[in-house]
Length: 255
Length: 284
Ligand SMILES: Nc1ncnc2c1ncn2[C@@H]1O[C@H](COP(=O)(O)OP(=O)(O)OP(=O)(O)O)[C@@H](O)[C@H]1O
Ligand SMILES: [Mg+2]
Image (cartoon, rainbow over all chains, first blue to last red; front, side, top):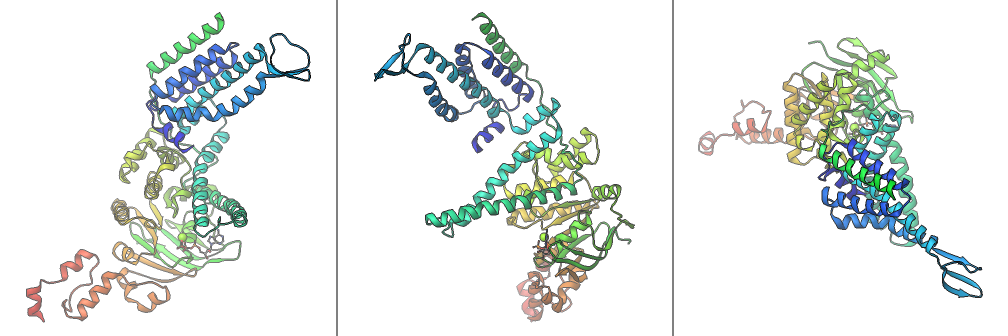
């Protein structure tokens, strides 16, 4: 989480206009979802990995680790999709047969599993590309341009900021408890964890009040107006992205 | 000089029954450096929240530039435009993940044009020495850096009065010096500064005028020299004497300084008073 966020602020595509990155990621995502054949999804996975690691400069190992998170879930579900249990003989079913029941795979099942797996990974790759290259603040700026209601955006702004405040508070409280043997036994661990949660609730409530006070002191009136960073359009990125998406689009039409 | 900001017979009790302020009267002259000293829980932060119209006094009233604050929407907006507060804990001020956006929030609320706001943000970044942090997310900043962002976010609003609630708490010696130098800069621009602190040394050298609070009351007021010569007052307020005064008096009592030596305001002044050894032997 922290590292992902850090790369979002420090990568070679950070200076590219966030609107371009959001558009590129979303259009590609749509193509992946709409494309009937898994070939396109596979292509997107490779291209997005390339864009994130080679072009944006995210370390390959970190990217791989990130991809492995959804992959382990998806692999489990894909396995379940691929497996078939049947009483009747089916065309192309191969597997083990016990008491007339067959547990095995059919070509269609395999194909379907591969499609689901690749599509999901392709979609994930698109979103990873966006979150690895674009800070949340910039994505919010794009959403504001797209006329998303200000209330929702303010909520996201505060939530995002407070994730870090909350994590820091959890960390401090937890350390303070550990240093006083709060987690020495199973029993005390349960008690400490309960107290951690309770104190977190109270502290969060106090923080929200303090924040409101501080915002009011600076003239807050129902909307968090801020100055957005102006990014120049990057024609190179725009052209490359558009070319890639067009290529995928025609590939989708042809196959 | 007519006071810029004034509290008259202010009393305030929190909903839980804590009497945080009792009959507090004090006035802030324009362009001066005012320190408010007092132990924890004395009511300093509560008083500051009144100066900005966040809290409303249950008794008494606040005057700004001679006008009584009537807590209408317009009066509050005007008060907050003129009086800025830098809160004790920067984490409670920062709402945005972007340093630039954070600083732009206040000036935009003033209704300024975006170009003007952008200029003010730049100026505030430079003044607080954090120009190189402008694109860093606020959650990866150190405490001292966050404090500077908080200061910049108020500076950019260019209020006439800036209140600093314990600006040097938790700062390392170097950051403390830098923040105090920044305050001196701001003061030179003609702004009025109010600061709360527990550090008697800082209050002694920095302030033009000092208020001492304890248990919700103002128990003393005066110039630094007056305040720190009043042993009984310091005793009741649990305050120590500044080291500068202690050393000065000891040197004087032991004859290292002439009896006519003026009371020093700064370390440099004291050092300047101490004569060289060859001459001082003759003096003894
Ligand atoms: N939100 C609140 N609800 C109830 N009581 C409060 C609240 N905030 C402060 N108090 C109480 O009011 C009194 C004055 O608090 P205040 O924060 O003004 O003191 P302070 O002089 O700023 O102290 P410190 O030096 O510790 O910052 C204290 O007794 C405190 O417990
Ligand atoms: Mg306080």
